[in-house]
Amino acid sequence: MLYIIIAVLVFGILVATHELEHFASAKLLGVKVNEFAIGMGPALWSKRKGETLYALRAFPVGGYCAMEG
Image (cartoon, rainbow, N blue to C red; front, top):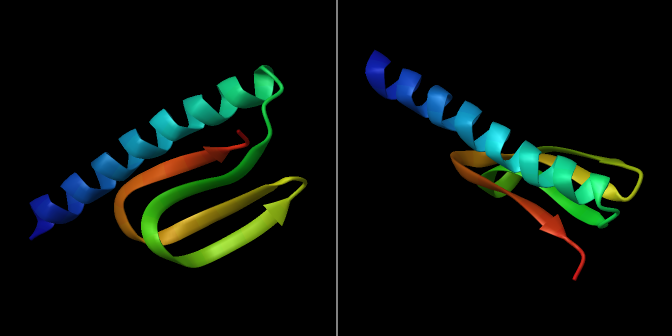
């Protein structure tokens, strides 16, 4: 069971890093980012800062960076 928890945490860190790179690239190039989320499914926590909604979602199996256009 411990290995599963560790695997999910490591996968979550990899996904978060990957999506953060998309987010940083979009911001540097002037692209509007509508939402930055880690996880999928219903939001457990979210906060809007400026034009971007930041969210932590229920299922740690991915993430996304929703950009304009």
